[in-house]
Length: 58
Image 1 (cartoon, rainbow, N blue to C red):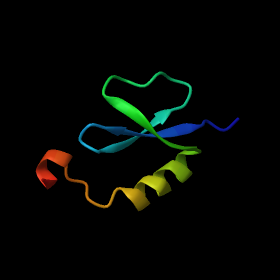
Image 2: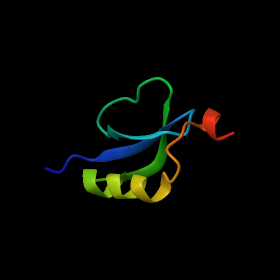
Image 3: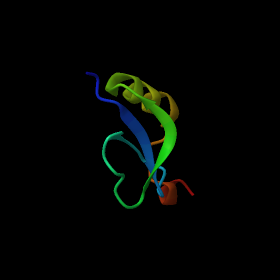
Image 4: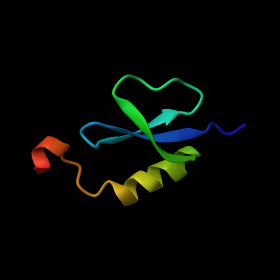
């Protein structure tokens, strides 16, 4: 059985992976992308081009 993962985002626009079977921790929200671990990592690699927190980018 393949574990499904969610790509999640916090208020500082930092990305992470979270198991789809677990409730999200406070401060994180789903981005709408779900898949196996590698697909999620590949997606994050494509969309997270500036790793600085949002408050630093301003």
